[in-house]
Image (cartoon, rainbow, N blue to C red; front, side, top):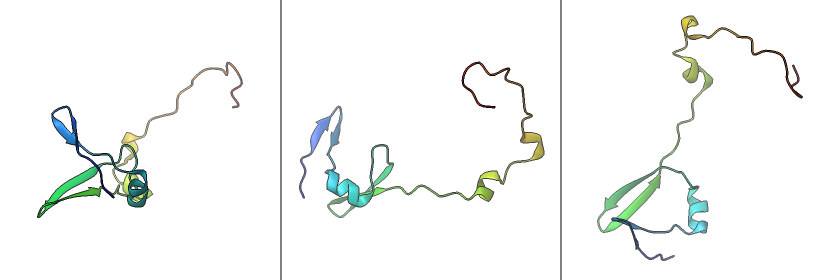
Length: 80
């Protein structure tokens, strides 16, 4: 599949065809890395690290917990 390089401000840009983006699991907002191998530009999506609950909570200590606070009476269709 071919694409054309276009000018975008002071940079160059290419459009990634939908079928290629789907195969590579690339969506809008995906972070990517560029590298050059010989005369080829290699674009690699960055994989998001999957955290475990233990990893997310490892720095939590009792002094970092916030107390509950009152938000007042329900004023609509809230269900308490």
